[in-house]
Image (cartoon, rainbow, N blue to C red; front, side, top):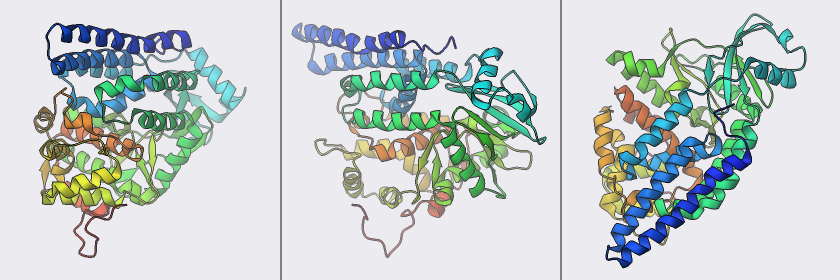
Length: 444
């Protein structure tokens, strides 16, 4: 595992460069301020250099550091592209080009997890992985009953490295407060640590995948391969062929991209109501268009448990936003914890920030595009302390919901999908449809 720095001393040293670097920049900033530069300019310079170092270090590390970097990426619109560009490139490289485990290590893990006779479970097993990611890799095999299966194997030591990162990151709360002063970083880190611990437990992932497979069994539009066998570090699922969503993005016709985008949204919005779970890792690698026209879904390591479906206030606030009552929206966001009591938020700036999330629900049909997203992001690319993105908090109960919606919008813009998204929100998100029996704002 040459690409996953596992030795605690090495990883701690890299993470330790963050607060030390910030202290140096803060001292430099004080000197400049004495020399005549305005406090705002100095603060902006410190924030920018801090951001550069944060993203550089997080991008170099896999595991918990990278998970935090991915979570913070929902705030990338607040940072200049010259800062986050290299960071995104590093993340993409880490996600797409993870070198595989040596065959001997694969066999060792299978022996430890399945026993000395692990080969008896399979009619055949391909030693070359079909995919490799941050904590594990996938091999194609044939189960003893003749079924083609995907065998997901966790990297040895991945769990210790991941959780060790969070112990280090928890000490850096003040640093992230410089970048995002409205964010309760301690709560976000705690939530992410819990979610990462869940991703490391393949038995828990197997339970989630089986729940999705049952909930969508026989569905005319979706297919989730069921679990065949699992333990803590090995997960065996039914094999699923199909065209990756990334290929539809690159080469699909307009009709194919519209269809894929609509099914993608329908799956994400309907699963909390149908299964009580939200798929919380919606990047193109986890979705396939099947030959029968269905959308196939993979990888259930990150899920948000929502036994009651979407919170009703979520739909109500979207509806009120579309009606133009920003005072009511701000009241609701304060109540839900998005705006802390000690923060004053500019209503127009907040409207500009929320528009990408809500605007597609205001019209009968909407077209997502990269140009539209760039125009939306341009309204909040500002490092000044008054920037609304930097003033908002992310309550722990919304960490994964926000991550899914932010990532989902990115996928839809890559697809360039045109569809009736409003219909999906009306159908699946409680509170969005205008109900005369509703309270004015059912919060609290």
